[in-house]
Length: 383
Ligand code: GDD
Ligand code: MN
Image: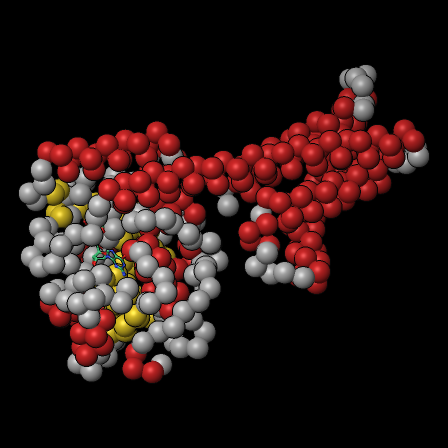
């Protein structure tokens, strides 16, 4: 890579950088006008990380072409610090996208972010890495757990920060409710938890995006005290509050939309299954097992097409073409295979039971479908 400067494109985090050996940890430092801090933070982080994981980590500075030439200072440091990489962005701007771009070129299995202005105490990295070693998918430095706090914040800033958190809880409870400090910009996440997920946050709060869209089963936290700035100044303005609100609303719509779409497709599948089943049974007088398998397959095709073209179109559009769609379809069929076998067994069982009880046997298929779909839906949604 020429003089350590990266060029990037593309959106989701990849499964791992195949060209180079993976590292344990990649830490992104987003910078904008941090000329007064960059030398110190790089030195402190290096001293700290060399103690525990020397040779197994990298630091990635992502600078948005700062007018104070932070990127240039960082680039000059790379001769003394071989684990330091620098990305200078000229086209794209903003804190969250800076973090994502950094992660996109990262080699680490654990992807982290820390402010470059020394407001985030570097020692906490050890605790966060400890959480990851214990098995966390996401480890967040929090001001609102034991050992956490803010230093000299005004009543107004505290109020705004907590207000923003309350608002988040109302709009996006299932995401914000998991985080004691949803505003934190100091955290690390397992690559596999976000690989392939489209991340597109607006504004500052990348943590919320990661928690909402990543596959986070285990969430660890460590307390930290938000320090006062020694050099440079904060870039937070009213714009960030507006963007935060935008971000919450966008996530709300997108999470709910997918959920509703998914449910609608599920229902349409049920309808298709039952209709085809009764046509085959009553119209063509086919046997129970054959009707079940055929109608299930038609429903599978129905669900696949709706989900591929609609519910998950953002994901499927990343692998365009008829061949790819066919591949996904075959895969989907394999996933459903166990379901169809189970459905056939169940439908025969229910049929026998209903017959014995002298009940209407036509509801055997409905009962089976209801049962199976309940189980399948809850499993798929958990993904
Ligand atoms: N590349 C890039 N582009 N970096 C940026 C940009 C940008 O547009 N804006 C800010 N940064 C960098 C800063 O240089 C700094 O390293 C870090 O992102 C945080 O920016 P600050 O402006 O210092 O933010 P803050 O301290 O007021 O706000 C912080 O609030 C949280 C706690 O409420 C957030 O940044 C969080 O990280 C923090 O935990
Ligand atoms: Mn700051």
